[in-house]
Image (tube, rainbow, N blue to C red; front, side):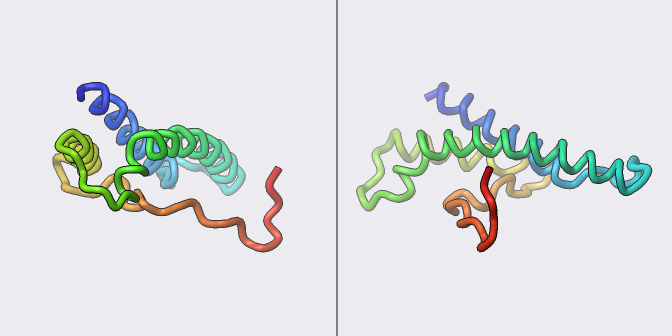
Length: 113
């Protein structure tokens, strides 16, 4: 069970980092070109983190939340650990509220390279 805790902790840490990267500190940015560069760099990192986190959801969580079967005690414990790590201790803020969402389909005209 400790293996789950470590994997889920890494997921939560990446979610915190995604939050920070998606909202750069504006007071530290000089002009619009610097802001643009920061956003491009940050969104690239966010994409990498999101891929890693989606792997965790697919491997450890998705089958549990999409099944109609009764959860075993081990499965309940696994989900409990995951949920515990998705709430900030100090603020009780949720780290990831889109757990069960599938990525949206590309919008019309979107070109995927």
